[in-house]
Image 1: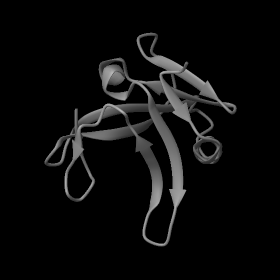
Image 2: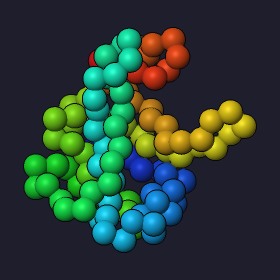
Image 3: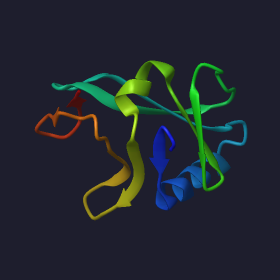
Amino acid sequence: MSVIEITDKAAERIKALLENRPEAIGLKLGTDTKGCSGLGYKIDYVTEADPADEKVEANGVAVFVDRKSLLYLLGTRMDWEESRFSTGFTFTNPNEKGRCGCGESFHI
């Protein structure tokens, strides 16, 4: 079992993002203090792998999970959604105990 699950749609979007960044080898997923609930998801490009991070490969893409966020993200499903009102990566995290009213942050 992987640390996180990357859906087919998320992998397609990651591939598209990486096409515009030839120096990037993948994306880094972590958490940061944010919003009124305490934690938010953070995504950035990776140009050099950090051996402390957990590398997850799926559908031809690599996502590096920040070591400091690993326990918060264990079992998370990363997806990509496009709708009339919002477009972006979505996360289904079994560790979340609640979210703020606007959905910007969560707590464990």
